[in-house]
Structures are given as structure tokens and as C-alpha cells.
Length: 143
Image 1 (tube, rainbow, N blue to C red):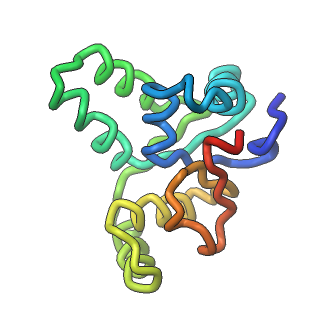
Image 2 (cartoon, one colour):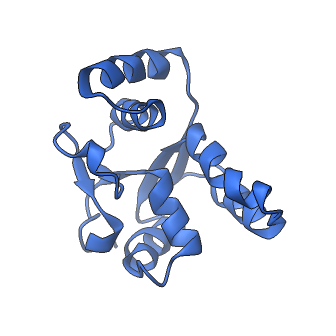
């Protein structure tokens, strides 16, 4: 059972939160207890975009860290409780609208468009650009 700030939510996982969970877990220990453990036990549904996969793989590939790249690939394999949404035409169209309306960078607009399309109630991110856009944003340091 999920307790804490993510309880009762369908959570969209932004790239930065995933990087913190994998690479800076000691800085944000709440990510383990409130995100990863409930996800693995099936008590929480998490959604993210294929753009997240591209973003998290960039540095491990650049640095030759095959183990970390494999860990990210394995984690982001879709399961019953982790949904990996593609950037399709509908997401791209909505992202363009959000980008214009809120002056977002393209990756952030894609994340927000996917979050909305997937009917997520919580966006887990440290990116302050998502604040005030009609979705509940929770920062990893608040877990």
C-alpha cells in the first residue's frame, strides 16, 4: 500500500527524478521508499515517455557506462505498473500547443503532454517550469 505524497495517484515520472533515483538515491532517499518500492510491489502505477529513455541513456552511453545504461533500459521495460508512452502525433501536437502557451522547452512540453494524455494526477519532477500548469507537481526532495 502506498503512503505519503504519491498515495492515490497515477504518477508521471520526469527524467530528472529517474536520474536521481538511480544515480543520486542517497540525496533523495524518499524516491526509494515512495516510488521504487511501491512500483516494484505493484502498489503504484508510473508513466513516463520514450523521451525519458533517450534522456537517461545519453550520459551512460557518452561515458561508456554500459551497466548503468542496461539498468535504465531494464527499468523502463513496460510492465503492468510501468507504462512507457511513445511520442506519437497526438502527443507531439499537444506538446507544441503547450510549448507555445507556456514557453516550455520541447522535452518538457512532451513530458507534460504525455502526463496529460496518460491521465496522471501527479508529475514527479524538480523542474519548476511545470508549476502552475494545472497538474500537481511533487519534487523528489518532498518525498
